[in-house]
Length: 378
Image 1 (cartoon, one colour):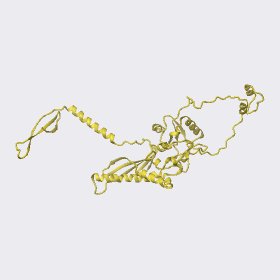
Image 2: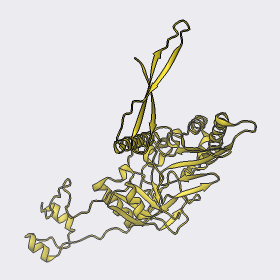
Image 3: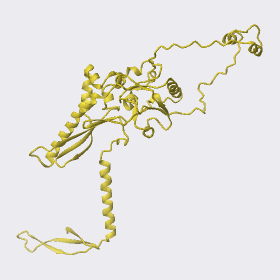
């Protein structure tokens, strides 16, 4: 016999009322009468509370997993604020806030849907204003590249149009969204849209050097004591190099170029401190030494690394740079000498620091992965 259950909760127990359906005594009318009687089933209160608590926890966990969780911005990020958006040079992305009101005469879900679409459109419209003004160093801005290359301009516009919504929320009378456009990334980023590796021709050139007059090294000549030690005669005043070649004397030990001195420290990256100077942020700054040599001019970087990491990242402190993981746990610390270029995006370091970076890179190859950070004022 089918049953229908009704539940009633009291303070100390759960009562279950059972309603039985029975056919009545009026078969001609086809009616049914309801005969209700009470079957009380007691359920202890504590297990019931446990079940309710578990159900609530399960619902909260499911909602947390379904919520989008993109990478959060660094708390000490280096940003350029432009209108309703900002360029985050630490994370490498552009964030824009878009807001829109519910149209007059509309309400409910339909009004919020229209407001959401208008907020997204407003945010992407601001992206069109911000993204082209990003500096690409001596090449100008992305707008400069768009003016010279029509196909590049189309790719940039399509990338901005596909910028995803990072966060959204309804307001009392409208809607608000946050749209994010990655600067770096292997797909759907500004770097891929402008074909970043192809634009950085200076990274594939030989170092740009300036001619410097250098004094000829002094010629070392043999004396009487050296001749006695080598048991040779009539060799005084002869250049030592010629003496060794003529008498087949070798006083040098051939080094093992594959062996690494265990006392040599291992560097995982380089941090260049430019705080206190008016360095402008750029997608591709250049690093020169005192001789005019481009420090990054001779390295070979895969295009995928350039697109995903960029040439450098900007941070506000040494701790932020190390905590980000870009330069590892033991970076080489360098202080900049000066800022170069009309755009104020290039920098110069001392020749000794440049030699130290190249020597360390010969052992640890951190420049090949672009493990370079620049410290700037926020």
